[in-house]
Image 1 (cartoon, helix red, strand yellow):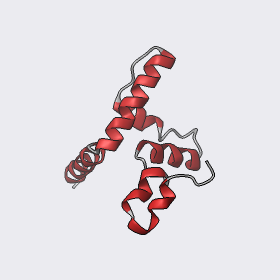
Image 2 (cartoon, rainbow, N blue to C red):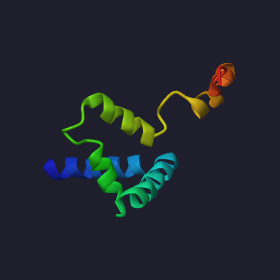
Image 3 (cartoon, rainbow, N blue to C red):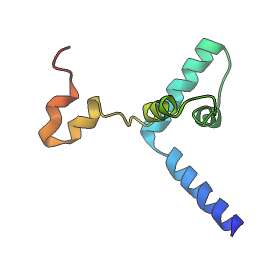
Image 4 (cartoon, rainbow, N blue to C red):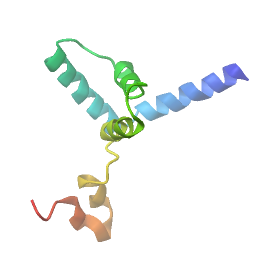
Length: 92
């Protein structure tokens, strides 16, 4: 049962990291880390850093949503016909 469960987790992990928007964000993060810190990081380093015990849950969730473009701003609204005007800030 343990081996079976590990196989399921590996498949889920593969499926989660194959999103194009997440890959683009990961590449941006890797380039920024290289520029700022002078060292390269892997995708696993980035994902693991989101689950560090020192972070409170809210900042960790915010960073995860940043990587996945999960915040309800910008292009999120362009795909909803009635809400397309929300994609751009009316005040700005």
